Length: 257
Image (cartoon, rainbow, N blue to C red; front, side):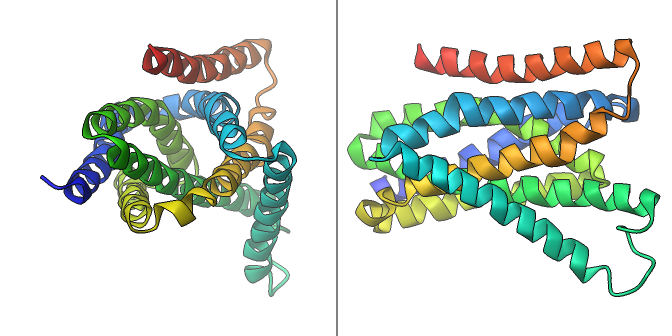
């Protein structure tokens, strides 16, 4: 089998398998568990950003300032995108900005949108990484693909939690994550065709993916946790956030071995 065929198969299989494995867990949970999964999602998103994505972007970039600047730009970009989404639905006096209940529902919807955007960026980068590994060595490509699958599962679980929390049905959440996973194939193909050019884009794309995940976790999800003020709820939220971070850290440790 040719290198290009390996890249296509690994990208397609890797993206779909991680989504399916995450779906088996996330989509079979009970409705009252969704709040807990959101806390776990916050930890998984932040863990992926600060333990994996940003360190990788900094390692690949000649300038740490450029990476941090791109993250800052990304946060402002996603803030602006949210404002545009609000503006488009506020051409009259009664909209989600003016109605608290509708505003809360719309906030959740935007969270889901931002997660899909960030996950698509991340999957695209995974495809480029897979292509680079296979172009170096077939064995390295296979190992790298397996590592990406293992790493993606906890993040995909978090994504499902956010989408369900945003009002998506289980089927729609699965469809959106599956569609997003095809960005891995796009990244693999483009990485194979123009790897030298694409390599210079990787740090910036990683930084943008990190920015979207930070924005979702901090601006959209964490404020919702403050609505539950009981000490028991707070302890549960902190434990689940730490568990989300710990899962990503554990995956990284296993992959490193």
